[in-house]
Amino acid sequence: ETGVTQTPRHLVMGMTNKKSLKCEQHLGHNAMYWYKQSAKKPLELMFVYNFKEQTENNSVPSRFSPECPNSSHLFLHLHTLQPEDSALYLCASSQEVRVGNQPQHFGDGTRLSIL
Amino acid sequence: KQEVTQIPAALSVPEGENLVLNCSFTDSAIYNLQWFRQDPGKGLTSLLLIQSSQREQTSGRLNASLDKSSGRSTLYIAASQPGDSATYLCAVSYQTGANNLFFGTGTRLTVIP
Image (cartoon, rainbow over all chains, first blue to last red; front, side, top):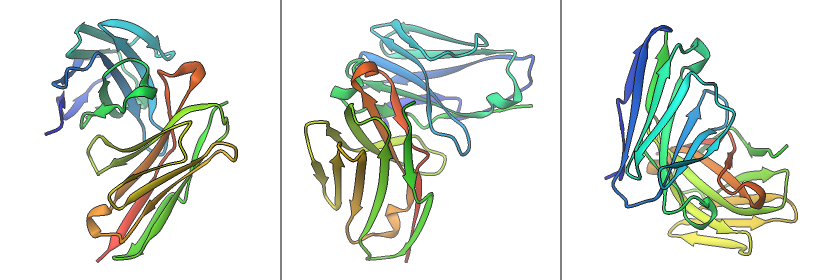
């Protein structure tokens, strides 16, 4: 039982498509995160939300648009993506935004392929 | 620039061996360091978290140490099992930007039965 659920698990889309990734956490946490994991590169933090408010945008291109309607749900809206955006997108949650106090819990990710 | 390095990139050991995974970081002003495990096609599972004031943490067959002054951490796995096969990632958070975890590229461990 993962506690953090991501859908879909796999997504193939063209560069002109619009799609959304969904993340839901059942842990009662207040902070949620989007990460990008590309082959042979370290995980990169994209966005951080704390109590539905965005607290960090790590210089992510505007073709990625996050949305956090409540503390349990996080979306990543995608449009006009590029081939280099193909990666595993991981969602995580933690009790509070200051990650040092609590470990982050990760979902299994969405494997995104851009044609 | 804050960098986290994990060497080796891959490691194979026979079942039953004790092993050590290494992690080094360039900036010693860390808030904490975490070790994660990632199975193929899966997300990350937090294994151990060491606060900057601590020197080690233990969980079962796992022991993680932290030496801030030298910018190094080790993950010791005792009596390795095939089920330990996975990629192990270390990540560091810094006091100046505690929201941001800086990850290494991981060590892919294979335990041979």
